[in-house]
Amino acid sequence: MITMKDIIDDHNEKIREVSKEVALPITNEERELLLQMHEFLVNSQDPETSEKYDLRPAVGIAAIQLGIPKRMTAIHVLDFDEDGNVIGADDYALVNPKIISQSYLKDGEGCLSVNDEVQGYVPRYAKVTVKGYDVLTDQEVKIVARGFLSICLQHELDHFEGTLFYDRINKENPLAPIPNAMVID
Ligand code: ZN
Image (cartoon, rainbow, N blue to C red; front, side, top):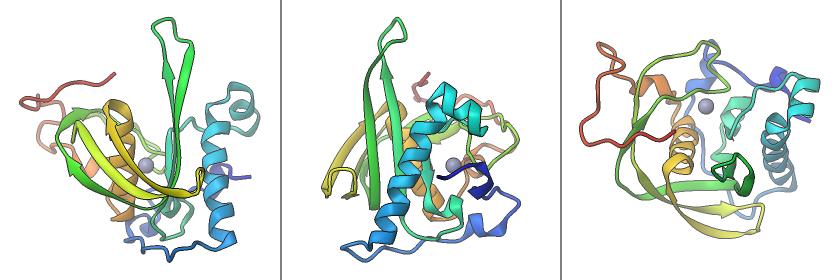
């Protein structure tokens, strides 16, 4: 099981490495890793398990955060109704995902590999279309993502290029309003 000790942070220069495409079909080892990454996210959002193993809650993780430079990422984003009840989830374990269309957006972000809280708006596309191979459903998927899920996917795909969310924050004025952007909670 993946725990925080497996995750590298931004003091480790490996986090800046560009990840490589994964040959399809993936190996059993790669499949196992990706499923474990997805399990980590589920565990990290479960109050009991996260407390027991001291996991930082996360909605996405890229393989490079485990020091493995492969274009693989897992996503676990829960959907809530107005009363805070879980009404659904977006779950993916993606191989070679790519953004194939986009529009734009802004919000503050955090990262498993960044220990300090970094203030500032991260300009993002409001809507992205991502294509990749999903190990949870064992098929090619095309995801049209808006809102929070769209931000998660862009954050994880940035890890493939060695880019961290704070690289995108306006250095002079981190909280400068971004024209024409909508805010996601
Ligand atoms: Zn991250």
